[in-house]
Amino acid sequence: MPDLVFEVFRQERKGKPFEHAGSFRAPDERAAEIYAREFYDRRHESVRLWLVPRSAIHPLEDLPDEFDTSYRRVDGYSLKSRLREARERAGTLDSGSGGEAA
Amino acid sequence: MVDDARTQEFVEYVQSGGQVESTDWMPDEYRRRLIKFIEMHANSELMGVLPERDWILRAPTLQRKLALTAKIQDEVGHAQLIYRIVEDLGKPREACLDDLIAGTSKFHNVFHYPTRSWGDVGVIAWLVDAAAIVSQKALLKTSYAPYARIMKRVCWEESFHILHGRDVVLAMVNGAEGQRALVQEALDRWWEPLMMFHGTPIPAADDPLYYWRIKSQANEDARQEFLDGYVDQILELGLTIPDPKLRRTAAGTWDYTEPDWEKLMAVVSGHGPASAERIAFRALSRAEVEWVSRVVLAEAA
Image 1: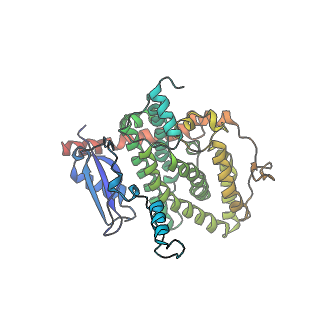
Image 2: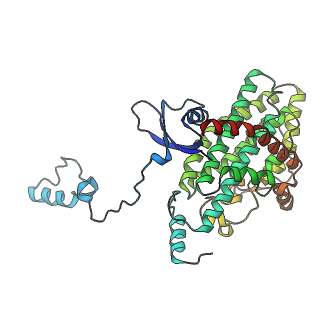
Image 3: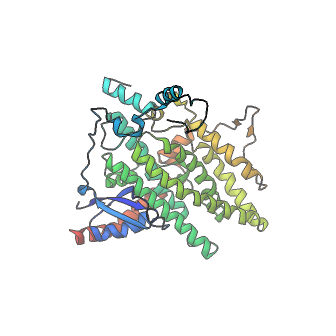
């Protein structure tokens, strides 16, 4: 059976990211175009579709965080207690300005 | 049910809300149950169009004809998408279609019954689809992620079907006496299959499909949700539900006449009033279009 599996990605509106929508089987690219319109565009809910042969997708599924890389992210920083201490030292704890820290 | 540490870890993962992708490791038992369950779903989408296709040529207006055709096209599209999920789990679509014709796989009970009037079209699109959407909404939380993602799209499209069905029913109950009678007569026939639709009231704790979190809802909870949502909508139209025992209890749940579960088992195993005719028709259409796939594949090769 010469069928290929095509993965479909759809863009809902211009400027939006493409999202995986599903897949279908087709014998070639010409048939894939017809099937994509039939299966994924009956209500014109997308502005663009990407049809990607599954064989062209190179998946990386082994992505462990072996070293703690939280210093690269905002959730790696908890300022609350430090800020409180700094405000206490500065005598500004009750002035209520400066906003809340995470 | 669980025989090794890896499987035990998998069960804990899905039971705590974890989701599984097609390329992840999964126990054979989980894969086997997924294939059987999802294949039955796809079969039901495909067989579900047969009672409705009989009415395309007999639709009362052009607008109804277009809407019914669109609904049927959606259901076949759902079958395509759902069979793809089964294929990625390891069972080819051709094998699913062979088994469906051979009667070795199942499809939902409601598609084993004949249709008699345009009233059936309204009742099927409104209430059968409503019952189906209760189950399908619960499947948005299934542990098998590719299935959950496809269900999102399916539910979105089904919502138009329910509206279309309710619109057909409303047009008929607002029409002549004869039209209203057709709706009532269809409801009288469809009520029993509808009450059977969500299956025997097996407790979630005893249901292997719940154990693996393929389903996220107990059968009885689905039936209660259907009754909660639709009984009042039926009664407010002046229609009668053919079950003298049906009532809302003080606790807010529904009492009803217990369906004959042996009859349900007989129907879904191919002994319903229209089972043989539907399967024969499916076999005929498969044979009739076989040349198309041969031509398309030969051209592509």
